[in-house]
Length: 270
Image 1 (cartoon, rainbow, N blue to C red):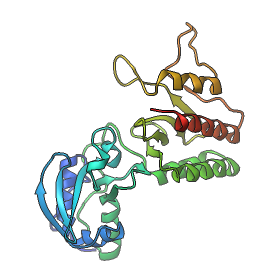
Image 2 (tube, rainbow, N blue to C red; image 1 turned 60 degrees about the vertical axis):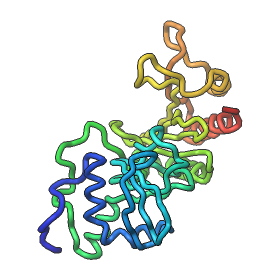
Image 3 (tube, rainbow, N blue to C red; image 1 turned 90 degrees about the horizontal axis):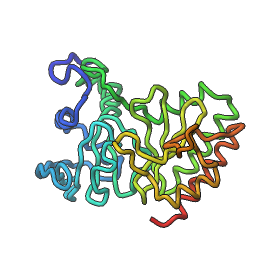
């Protein structure tokens, strides 16, 4: 292992630090971009910030690049049609739009340490523990495997692999939850109403409760169709619940209900 003579004391914890790390890794980035199908010769053209952060020339082709701490930070903040590449520290966005490639610098650095003994980050942790941090898909699957039975895990695994093949679906691992989660989103609505927890439970949200007043995630008529499948969720006061766990007697029934909800949303018109 080479002695660390320059680099970073801690892992990136801001988008700006991701940009700095990318610059430090630039001499080694080409082969990782080549694996993404973008080419290996990398030249910075200009910093633009609008509509994306910068323009690069990769093998002479213009590539629009957005930097993010976590790849899912892109969702809802930028136009996917105006970006070709997301450079992030951690990739927690599964099944993004097909036109967008994602380069995860944490994985790049890990491979450079293993293959070349090149370490640019002294401590494998952020300087300040983030209030919210993402789980990776691998961490979610490992936790799920440890928390449910072998047969139940296979039911969830097959279901996740199935929906990953749907172009209209996107997956996002949770940020800040106490237990790893996998959120299921619909590209045409730009929301993630379904959530699978690594303990084998699943829930559905009808409103964004992180804003005041809470705003609906889906059109009312679509919510009513879902209520016909799952039952109208009401509080003791008779009000419609903003979210709830999906009741099922076993994992197979739970996945069946998730499929039914997904089909209803995919068939709906925006």
